[in-house]
Length: 307
Picture 1: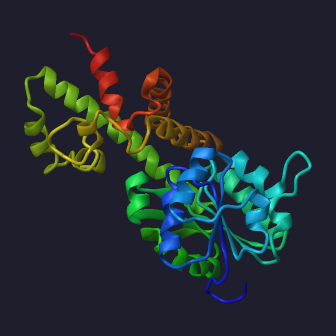
Picture 2 (picture 1 turned 90 degrees about the vertical axis):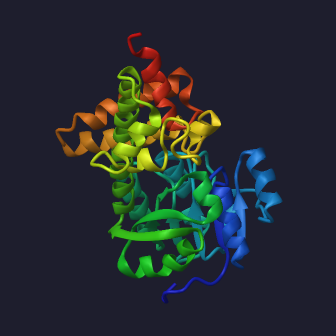
C-alpha cells in the first residue's frame, strides 16, 4: 500500500460492545467490511447490523487491505498476529503490505512489540485505542489516540474519521496506547476525587445540585463531574440516573488502571494516586462493580463511610 488511501476490504476482528457499532459505521459509510468474533452473541448482533461474517479470523484477514483488531488484551493481539496452537497467524495469511490497525487497549510495550513483528513480516502497523464508550461508538463520536509513522497515520485517518470525531496523532508506534493509559489514569483518579467530594458534601449537608453548581463552574471542574457526574440529577445523561448502567464499566476502568500501573512501574515514575486508584477500582470490580459504570465507585465510598 504505497499511497495515502485505503481501497479494498477491511477485516474487523472483535465485534463486542465497542467494535460492533464501529464496524457498523464503516458499513454505513460504504466500506467493504468482513467481521469475525468467537462470541455467538456478538456474531448475532453484527449480522443484525449487516456485517458479513467470516468463519475464522484468518479467513477474514486473507486478502483484506486493512486488518482492524479490537481485542481484550495485548496477549490476544500478539497471539492473533503470530498464530497459536499450530494455526496460522494474521501476519502470515495477510497479503504483503497490509495495514494492521489495532484499536484494542493494551500495554504500551505490547503495542510496540505488535508493531515490530508486523513490520518484520512486511506489513504496516498503527495503534489507535479508543475513548468515548459505547454511546460514542454508536454515534461515531469517539476519540482515537494514534501511534503511527506519519504516512501510515494519513492512510488510516479517513477510516478513523468514519468511526470517531477526534483523531489525534500522538507519535510513533505505541504512542496511542501511552496517551490512552495517561488519560484514563487521570479519569480514574478524578472520578474517585469527585465521588469522595459528593459523599463529603452529603455529610456536611450540601445538596448534590449545590455542590455541582459550584464545582462545575470553579476549579473543581472536570469531565468526571460535568459529563459523568456520579450522583443522579445534575447531569441527566450520566449513568447515575440509570442505576449506574455503563457507560464505561468498572471492569474496564480496573483494566486500564492496571495498564497504567504497568507503565508506571516500567518507567519508574514516583506516582502515588495512580496505583491507589488501580487498587480501589480492582476492589470495586471484584466486589460487584465490574458490570456497573465506573462512576458507581461513589456507592462503595458511601457504604464504607462512617455513619
